[in-house]
Image 1 (cartoon, rainbow, N blue to C red):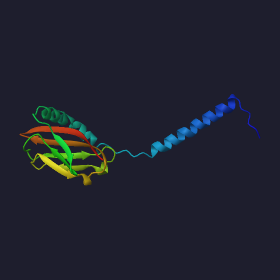
Image 2: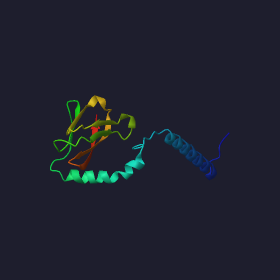
Image 3: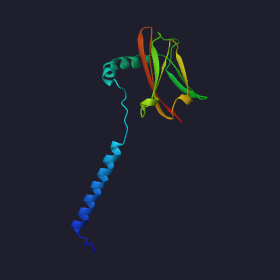
Image 4: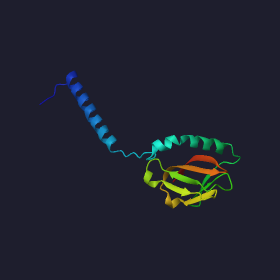
Length: 145
């Protein structure tokens, strides 16, 4: 049996190829896993003004927050000697919420975490604290090899 090649046959082959391609893409898209940035994002949106104020307050300081990875340890150092006791440092992993880590400041200006407790990949290090009643916020990126 021979197929007579004309524009109709080419059109059917092109259309069929497109349909198979689209079905493949739909299948691949349904297999992707997406984590929400936060489960309570409506509440977080209402608190966003506090984040803006914290960023502005942190920029007015003489020193900045330092995130450093040395000798298998990640250290986050705040630009002030002590905090009001309220504060935390969140290691947020955008691609998988199961690997997020939260560390309390407990009145100090420094937290450390072993690199072995963090999975490799990109983290956003988010530090929030209060000092003398003022809120502060800093966010930096950190890549763990």
